Image (cartoon, rainbow, N blue to C red; front, side, top):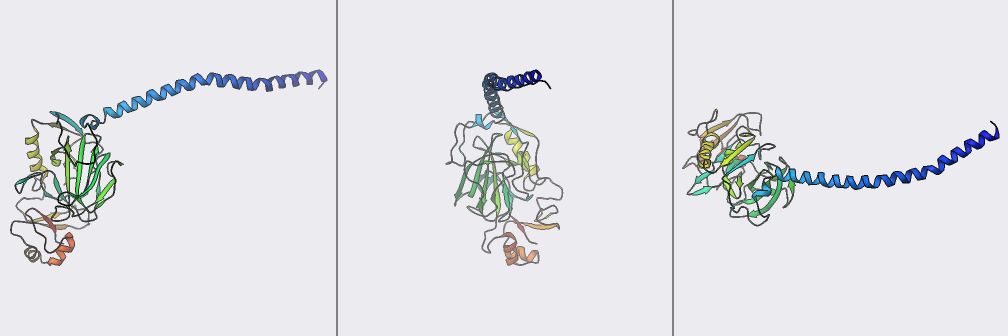
Amino acid sequence: MNIKSFKKIAVLAFSVFVAAPASAQDLLAKQAPVDRKMKAVDSMVLKRIIEQEEKYNPSADLYEDWNNVYAHRETVLPDSFRIDLRGFHMPTDSRVLTSNFGARWGRQHKGLDIKVYIGDTIRAAFSGKIRIVKYEPKGYGKYVVIRHHNGLETIYGHMSKHLVVENQEVKAGDPIGLGGNTGRSTGSHLHFETRLCGVALNPALLFDFRNQDVVGDFYMFRRSKYAAESAMATRLRGVGGVTAGDNDQDDELEIATAPRTSSNVHFHKVKKGDTLQAIARKHHTTIAKLCELNHIGKNIRLRPGQILKYN
């Protein structure tokens, strides 16, 4: 290679080396407006996401405030409202109902009682936010209230332990507590309420505990039809409802699909005048065994319709 050629290559290389920073600076200068545009786009996307969430979060329109004082306080109930039941999770895997929604002992029972044992896991029925975690000795006992995105609020009463705190976000199926017998309760069970604008709705309208499912993807609440639909739901899915292998007149129930054991589990449905001694004698067991199986004391006051496991 001659001297002239070498000089040309050196000059060319130097020119490229010197030009590189300038090109980079030009690129950065051009990038600045793009960054500003992207920030604007990000803001628009964020705004759109928020709008979509508000659109699919009816609770934002139904409730004016958020408080941790009242378990429920009735507000204006819409004439009709579509409740999205998709994405549900059964609050317990128990299929045994012990008390219906409605009139009971001269007062209104605002939820369903489901047989659970002390220590059984209780789960959030839908995604939402924990509004209340409290202990009420003369009522719900240890209970949790969740406000869900679909507009419902659910209440879980008589638990033995809380597993969540107030203002905590939960997903459907997340553990929120353990089954128990706290508060005004005569045996371990879950008191489960579904409320809309603070007004108690019959959970049997939405949930089918025996089949561990909801009644459909949506439930259309209509004030004009609610009473009739609630009564029908209790007949179909409440205690003594029309289900295979179940008869309201029977005092012995066989739950072949009970999740706690692979064999058939037998239950006794308490009738007026029943005592632990009489139940033990009828099923060839002992009072001590009944108490152990049901986590109850021997001096418990039995109530008609109560379900006791005896094997």
